[in-house]
Image (cartoon, rainbow, N blue to C red; front, top):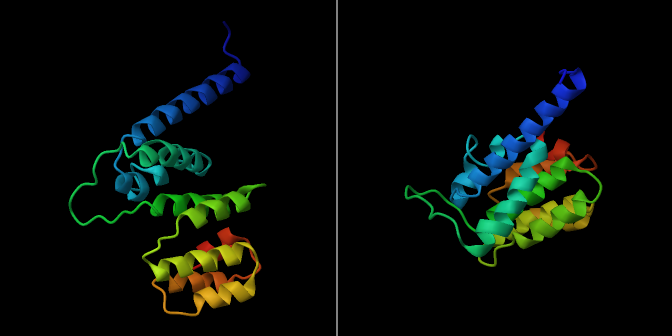
Length: 168
């Protein structure tokens, strides 16, 4: 069979898709901290269009079932709220039709009943996505360890989340 440019492009695309699926399968065997925080092994190592798929699969698979390796010692912090939060952020950053509502759903799932600072940050971010300045100000007025992010969102009010969040 003659290798045309079309056939070569199809072959490359199929190879990349297969390699991506295999890589995500390997990621599903990682402990949650490594999957979430390790930039060379976890979801952050994937191209942006594959990150959301990998996080959904990890949350709905190993995280939901509890079938993942134990988190290694060494003080690495992880809780069950972190991955849903990052999935919400990734959706808000991608900002395709339907992403905002799904981002908010995931962010709401990331609330932690024992951490009022975290919940204020979550609520303020959701208010930003809903363009609700009164709610944003209410939830961002107290001291918060995510103050720098809240300040960027305030400064970027009216802009897309990606621009406001990533603006330094």
